[in-house]
Every structure is written in C-alpha cells, then in structure tokens.
Length: 239
Image 1: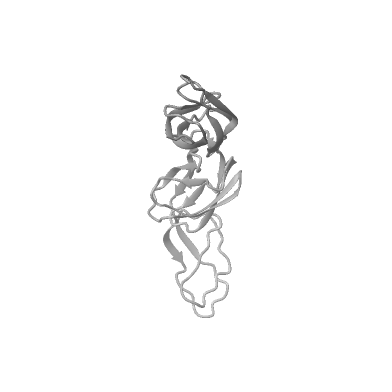
Image 2 (image 1 turned 120 degrees about the vertical axis):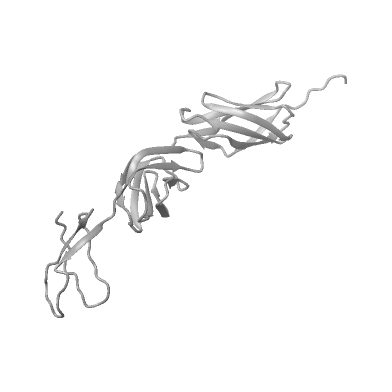
C-alpha cells in the first residue's frame, strides 16, 4: 500500500451566496469536505477578484473577494482546487447582483432650518438595507423608509447654520454597493425678516392684511403668531 487515492473536495454551501457590483473585500465562507491547506477558490466569468483563500478546516474555507462595479450581473460557478489539483465546481453557487441606480430626488431643495421634511429618492435596485448619506454637516437624517426597490423616503431636518449649496447623495447597501448622485440636492437660504406693516392692530380687529417684507420666501410659506387670540386667515405669497 505504497500509494493511496484520497477523496476529492466536495461543496455544500457558500455564505453569503451573493454580493453586489462594486462590493470591496468581502469574506465568503465555503463549507464542504476534504479541503486541504493551500486550496484555492476561483469563480467563472470576469469581474470577481479573489484576494485570498484561507484554509480553516477540512470542511471550511474563507474566501475574500472583491466584485468590480462593471462585473456582469448573474450567477457564477465556484471552483475549489486542492494543491493536488483535485477539484469541485459548484454550478451557479454565487450571484453578482445589480447595484442601485439614481433617478431623482423630490423635493430637490430644502431651506436652512427646515424640520422633519420627507424627501423621496427614486431609482432602481434599492433594498431594505439601503442607506443614504450626504456626508455634509447640517443635514440630519431622522428616519429612512424603504418603500420598494425603486423608492426610498428620507425624513430630514436642515440646521439653520447648514452651508448653502449643492449636496451629493450617497446610496449604499449591505452588499457593498456605493453610488454617488453628484449635486443631486441643495440647501437653500432660509427666510429672513425685514418688516411688518402695519405692525399693530387693536383687539377685535377683523380680517386685516399685514405685509411682511424679507427675503427667501417661498410659495406655500405660512405665517404664525406667538400667544393666543390671533387667527391667521391666510398667507399669500407675493414674491
């Protein structure tokens, strides 16, 4: 018995079994049998780079991969090859998923000091784990709601001191996708007050027009007064 034939590797599972386009440096765990130190993992097609294959035990390997942003979407075969060239191929064991795309944001602007405003992001391939960030001080994300794969609602507040100007929106998910919508959103200057004419009315005054002068008023602006006893019948946007 100078020579022996040993069993080749087998494949049981791959976890996780999918990653998104653009996913960098993710660990995948391969479970099977008869793995040997020095075993190497490879994937069919192009766009998946195997950074390392780590032998854990004869039944477990850790494969670190990066998925190119341009990798073709769809199933890939996984091949595990032992140093003696015995190998097993798991057909369609891994899937490259499409990354998110950006179409629009509504509204695309909010003013300094805006509170608890819903902003709807539209695109494709969103997931329940998708997150949105601006990376800019002054924008506060209160909540994020996954509506469906094409729509996410972000409730935000804008600090009164937030810098005025365009903002990028970064869309990321748990599969490593990262998309930047450049200058998709803007913070505009908040309203300012200059004068109110007339600046007084008597008790019992009915239906009087007051003219407010300032800057950065917007259609739909609403006037309110502190205290009680003053009813605002309407606020009309002039300019």
